Length: 251
Image 1 (cartoon, rainbow, N blue to C red):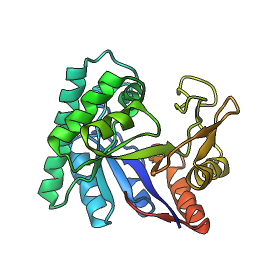
Image 2 (cartoon, one colour):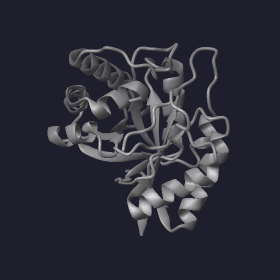
Image 3 (cartoon, rainbow, N blue to C red):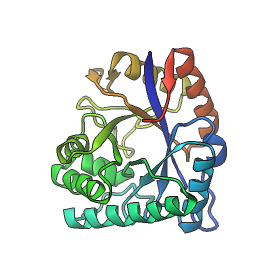
Image 4 (cartoon, rainbow, N blue to C red):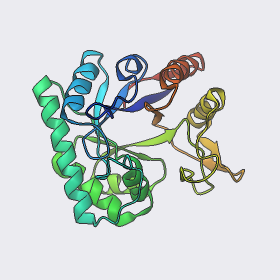
């Protein structure tokens, strides 16, 4: 039987600003990536999201990003490898503390946004991030873009890695995600997104915007919790995956 982890970025509300329907989406996903206060989130939202995920038995992970609240961590920044190492250690440590206070544990780390995509291409940056995770806790699983430098870096330092694919993003011929600044970067049609995921899991391929069939490893699939109809999509993808005899379970 095929199997896949279904992960979602959460805890991205900040202060008085509300984002997503985290509590309801947790009923359909198996892993949650919790914002750690740099690109989004704050201490109160970190605590409450950890509590909710722990109560529902969903695997908890840190979602460290660039220090860019205004840009939601989706703008590239000229950070050094040492700066990337330090900010990842800092953010993992913050979430670890909330997990400890709740009497639960952290299972994985998934970098966010621009940091994630920069590390997918940049070997030096990828090594810094992977080392930061390993130095904090070598038992943590690294979630990273399938086929990326970040996956390779995780393996090289001795981490378990989970190759991530995306339901609502289009791909380029080299296996990278289409930048959000380009047309057709996002898949807005739910059925098209679900069909893409089923094919990635069962066939190990995805069709790029250029028409190429690209080989891909699908261990975990991301759905974005900040979408306008994220809850409905989470319910649909869970249902369709199971209808296609794809078991949904945490990494």
